[in-house]
Amino acid sequence: CWLPCAVISLSCVSSAAGLIHVFGYEGRDVNVACPYGEGYESYEKYLCRNDCGNDDVLITTTGAAKNKYSIHDDQKKRVFTATISDLSSTDAGKYWCGVTRNGKDIYTEVKLDVKQGL
Image (cartoon, rainbow, N blue to C red; front, side):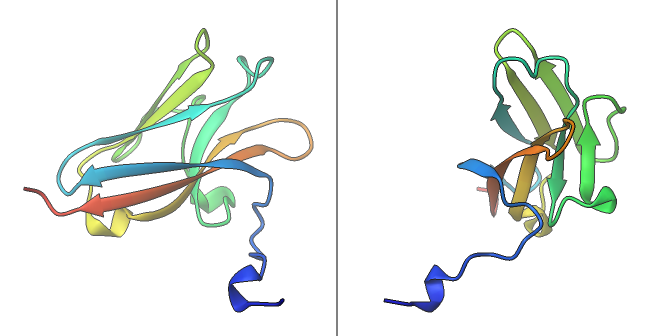
């Protein structure tokens, strides 16, 4: 059967492996842990929004922390962690953990829910 919900997203980012669901509270920080495969330890990692064009990249492991974003790559555990500080409701939505490589980058989809503080 063909249901509207079966329509495939026409986003530029299509090679998502799994989904990371993260919850945070307004005014607090949230950590997004992004695992990656063996062999990519020395590659650049990043966090982006939307279609991950140049303007959508929020922070990279090769750049300095900026605004409310910081990032740390634990190459022994093969997990990089992006931190979003001082959350607001506008931060909620879809992000992507990315690994820069020749050809197509590797992406994992992240869904961030922001709840009002207690």
